[in-house]
Amino acid sequence: MGYADIMDVETSGASAQTARQDNLHYAGVEASHTMAKTDLERVRRYKSIINSVAGRRGIDPALIAGIMSRESRAGNALDSQGWGDHGNGFGLMQVDVNPRGGGHTARGAWNSEEHVDQATGILVDFIGKISRKFPNWSKEQKLKGGIAAYNMGDGNVHDYHNVDARTTGRDYSNDVVARAQWYKKNGGF
Picture 1 (cartoon, rainbow, N blue to C red):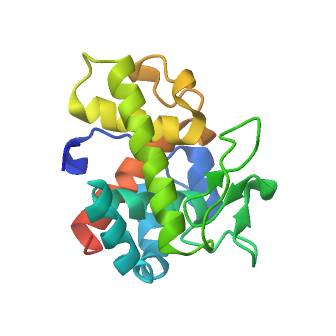
Picture 2 (cartoon, helix red, strand yellow):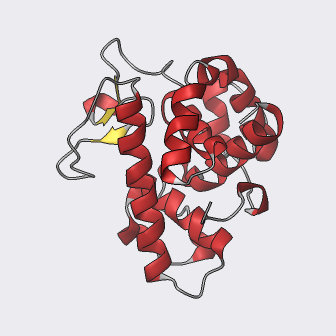
């Protein structure tokens, strides 16, 4: 894979705001790991899709699993048609269809390989944009910046030390990285 090893990316994990979604009274990496573990059986339902897309796109499958967990709780936070975020996000990885946001046209069923491939393609595109915008960042920083951009767009990534300043919960990339690290170590991804 041409991207950094997810296990080498630094992370502070979930914010207290994100951890409260699961009524956790603690934050950080431990909270991210708890939420990843909660979602494990749902994420595993999509393991063959995740592995197929990851191989095709050159992305660590644990990262796709981490985004699924964060974005939709592996489908658990979606309505019966696969919509979340008040109708602005579609599918397991919540492709942004809002014209004032990502403006994407959702492809495939909400839980399909086509959807996961589209979303992972968007992630890969953002990693590329961040890599070009910050050529002196390390591979790990570029990967983390691309994850943040997946949530809020590359125009909102201004520096590495505040990479999550404008992300949902102000912790998106840190939480996703911590969840992905858990899935890599404990989830079989």
